[in-house]
Length: 159
Image (cartoon, rainbow, N blue to C red; front, side, top):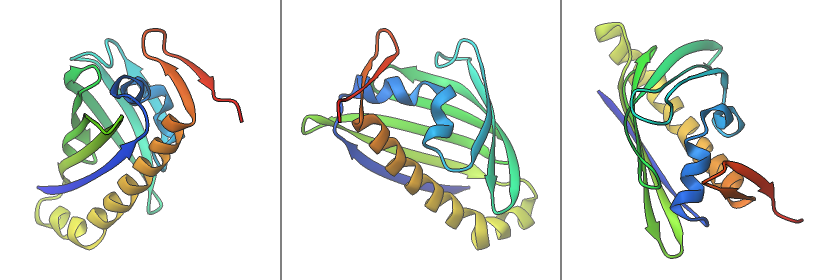
């Protein structure tokens, strides 16, 4: 299995951070190449799922993530199936008046030895880059808005 892990400090509460993270319909706003998001209830609660496509290196990769564990303001653990199999862990920790978001992808590509070679040569580097960019985009989006975690309402901060 390959492991990709990145973290970012966000100037927002864990609740504000989780409100955007758990709104899968908004993932394409911050995750590079993500398209065609279909959310199935009871997402983000355990058992809910999200099917989406990610365009990367000229390919469109279909992935479904199913919620294994959801702890509001703390954790979102997803099982990945499709072109990547494994787990995506999004962990939120209060830090210095903000939130440290640590994301870990623990995955395998299909294809046995050929999948491992493709991962070593191309996929891991692309996953590293995409996750780094996603967290940068996510941080900017969370910090530019006020999110009411009870209502899911989003209001832009005055310029």
